[in-house]
Image (cartoon, rainbow, N blue to C red):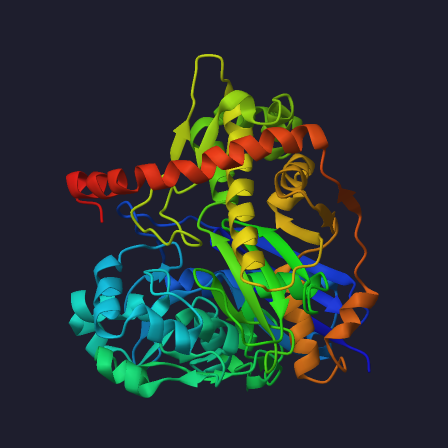
Length: 513
């Protein structure tokens, strides 16, 4: 078989598309950045059409760069940061802004679900906890706070589902995104738990129909073809979550395989086949062989978001220098951080700038910079952000290991912050394991294309990716740094319990709950 595949990933800060051939070579790619809307602390939104506009432009320009005949595209796959809550009416028009995974407004609704259903029952059904992170909680917030929009809504969709709907006309979702809609999604039976939704007063019909990640769920419409440059009738598969798509692209598909994705969020996950889930973690159906495999995920709300925040807020000097030198400002920021020793001379950051997911699940937690002195410079702050994320990943890995889920002793790294050699070494030193890096990987969009390839029969299975994966750089722990980080990690884990009640008081004082 000859032909090409298109993958497109909708991220928190931007969207990237690729065109690959059937040997895994990228023939064309394009990326578009866009802003996050934060109308008040704890809220995080996009306009849904931001996703669609970005998908249109990135696919169109990727096809143009690939210089191929669009009729040769065999299939299309999408992924996105997840979850998100987008309400569409019967004409499939959006009714509100998308409140995304980072949004923490559903604190009261989480307490409502705990009171009505209980943590144990939700975990038994979904393999997940109750938290404002999950889209079912977000939908309940809409019902409680904007009932006129809830009543008008035909379907709730995620950030991947909305452009999928615009591409095909089908308002559906996939097993992975359904896992993060959460609460009432039966992760083993892979269906909505109707009695639970009815008990919460939520209309089951507002939830999208669910499909395996690689199942063809629709075809590019005439209108979408005119905008994207794709051919009308091109098959489109159900799609995936961004981190799982990224892991597919790097061959993280077998039990025990594990990887870190350092995008806006920091996400670590391990693959397993047994439907055995770890309390406090995120449980997701894997994009590879979604009928049979899972990933247990530890997810920090902020990872690359911290470095971008520093760039946008404090790095005007680096931005100007980067423009003059025609390089990325992140390269200059890395050089500053590299001059700082392990442990950042005692500067330690809790990366809870937008609350936190695993393992503390606290929407009221906030970022803390601990140990500041007049001796600390810009490089200290940049490095301490990187180290704080690494401490958070380590905390999650330890909990999953203690739950008995097997984890291979090499952790893969891909995308975003993983492009920083310094950050990869920090991860190796903090985690105490070897890290493996794929330099030329474009991550999630390539994984999306692979999922589409399996779905349309271009590939016999997901093992094909192992013929393409080539790790370009390994990092092993530095014993001297490891010793420093062991002490800093112990301090890191001790700070939050001491501050937990203070975060509650802060929310009460400011009214930002």
